[in-house]
Image 1 (spheres, rainbow, N blue to C red):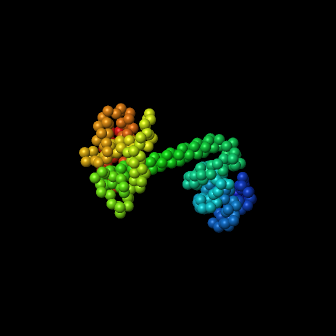
Image 2 (tube, rainbow, N blue to C red):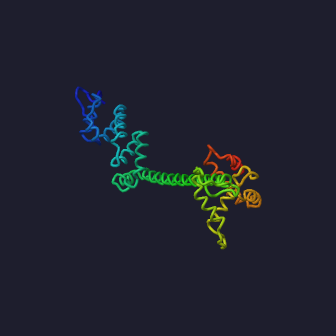
Image 3 (cartoon, rainbow, N blue to C red):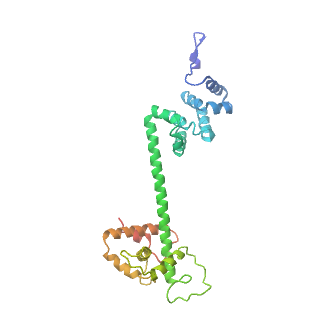
Length: 289
């Protein structure tokens, strides 16, 4: 362009339209000296980004991208930067600005920049809204799975505590042939305290209503769950373990599938350091389709 500007011994003007005069001055200075003032970079970063792409100046393009990634990208310009990054082939910058939009969607949704994008690029605006919905669904799904893992882990600890109470005894509760001492060693099972109260209630509950007591139902479910993970019912000291094993054969297929899924998920929380009294995960999950 500079060579063609001088024709027939006369100089012709090179027009650079669409950007402020001062931004062009900073751009031309960089072309000749590769230097710039920080304040000018901060002020004209968007225009320099556009000029670096339009006139193929890769060094300036990398500098603009670096400054945006390290402080100049904010909620005031992120929507414009995102559109410009897509237009001018800045894949990394587009990802970073897209992430910022997702994190500040509620703040950005009502801004003038968002409304302008909605008018000029409606499909892009819709894609962003869809991305927010997908991101929110993924966040809820992560929370749900985290809560499920916590519940399954608590169930596993309850199974360990149940075996501990019925086999070794804990503080003041345990097998009838267990000799409890006043200076009994402290229990290492966190679930023992709640389980001890549930067992005492289960042993002395006199409530006779249709459907039974809620606490007793919970105890029955824990006993059945134990029987499904117990590795050796013949040697097991947990009450009714063998009875529940026999009961499994008479259950409906729907109930059996539901129990097996619960067992698989519960045992899956303890891949390392699993109790030797419980079945391996493969045994419980191999029959689940």
